[in-house]
Length: 236
Image (tube, rainbow, N blue to C red; front, side, top):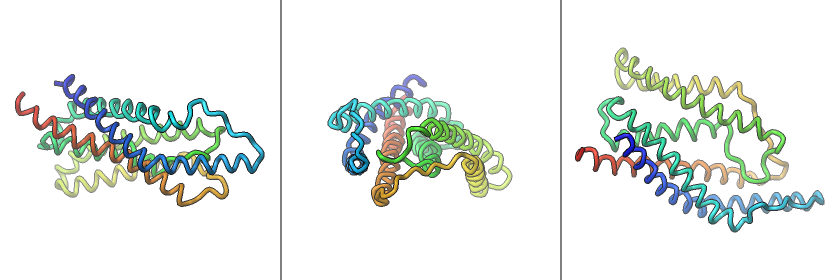
């Protein structure tokens, strides 16, 4: 059964990756093009030659984006299937659809939303090459802390629910999660490397699009996986 859920998660992840590709071409790529145009104009104003492209923009926004979205979707889907296999029957009396939706929502919050509140996605022309190591390390550290805090809060919720009731226990567990991740995020380094004159609306639209793209992935994964699993489990 675990192998079946792993493969099912990867299959649903591939489909979700295709949806992400279509959504990113529609919502994300226009913002990337505008950011590249700003970067090119800034280099020309400084008299600097633009950096040579190792991969053309045409390939980046077509085959490159498609490959990345599908591979990422399959990887996340496989991990989602394994987590579902572990959690099924251990989190209340949730059925396959409800459990998949809950896991997708929790995964989106812990892996996407919380880290991007501290370190939001940046378009081209934003960020310094000298600090990329620090930024990357802090970002992945925050993801690890967020996942650990989510697991710990879910474990504490079971104890708190027995003492204070389901509703109050859930609220207290959510508050515990917020306190832990907020405390850790407070001590992580701040990153503010937006160049002067960069359009604020472009920055906002790019960051919103980055969150929306992840929401499409996790939403499709949770709904699709839950639907397929609910159809299959009663047979087994």
